[in-house]
Length: 285
Image 1 (cartoon, rainbow, N blue to C red):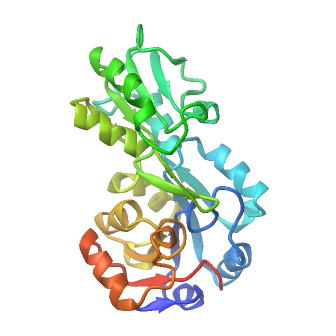
Image 2 (tube, helix red, strand yellow):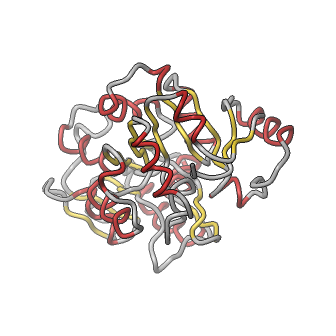
């Protein structure tokens, strides 16, 4: 597998970019070195950049976070998130899974994720009794992000009431400041194992790419996706008909692949059933 040190060559080949955030642009606490400069140079080269993240909160929340990380709003067209896509689904009620969901949701997740249900007339509760469905945005501060085990009683209580789960982040894990934590996808995986009905919103579902492709307004062969997760970013891009580059930060670095040999990366990609066109050391020019 070809390994790149920066994106200058990619900006000469592609006109549009779909960039993951966590593990590519930032680590959940700060932007990676060189990212803002790379985005500015990509813009100068005429590239269109849209972020596509499995973050379980609305786009305006993520854009504010990016600004706090020093990623100016002028450097990209938009940020699309799983939370934003979910909010639109709950607003429009055209998807069969969400069409008949009631107004009261048992929420597993942090307070900062409440934007997924804002202005929709949905009441969030921490009890399964009286809930119509289960909104899963990931771990909460009280039970932590180390293991699914502390969430087992809540999942079983929801299962006992037959609550369908809407999972707003299909990622199984993410790396925050060098520490691996579980995401909503890990809880959804466990709920499905128990027999619960689940719908996961976001990558690798190719439908998650439709909003960003509309924003880019480019043919698919002119667009490149960059992400650190083979399971979501690379598989999702492949399913959406886009070329993809494997970013070796985030989850890849946590797996010890940041400095792996091309043969090792190729073998790992083959195990995941994905075929990235290259690997990338970091989002820098």
